[in-house]
Image 1 (cartoon, rainbow, N blue to C red):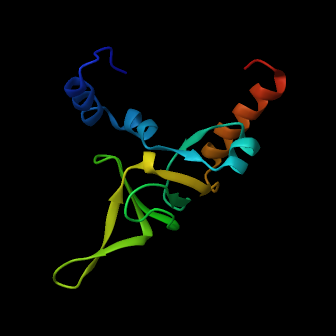
Image 2 (spheres, rainbow, N blue to C red; image 1 turned 180 degrees about the vertical axis):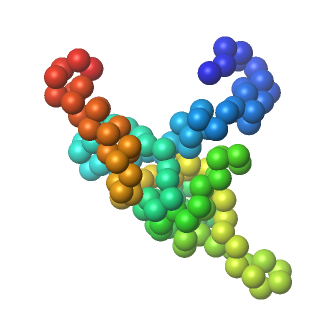
Image 3 (spheres, rainbow, N blue to C red; image 1 turned 90 degrees about the horizontal axis):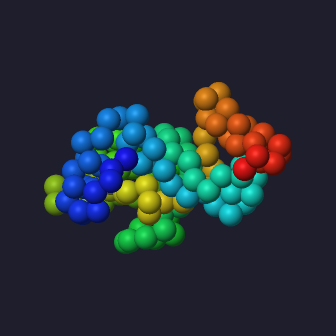
Length: 127
């Protein structure tokens, strides 16, 4: 994506990236069982995926992804909430690198195709 090694330029490129590239940046690791099953290490996080928080205050919490914000590169999980001073509960945004997908939502045929394509390549011995 970017050739520069300067952190500021890297961040700028990440925040100004087009949405189709940000979708790739929204990837999270798969659990060990899923990794063996799908022959993939990670998948982009989508609404409906079951994830486990791996870092931070909510470490170990599992829940479904309720919203994915591509512009901010954050995911919102159902069980990860914080109380505001007014008493209102709000979702806490979490970066996808701090998540692990435990049960992906495979309703979309495009997502199934991505996994099947990787399996086919692995089976033929090309990768």
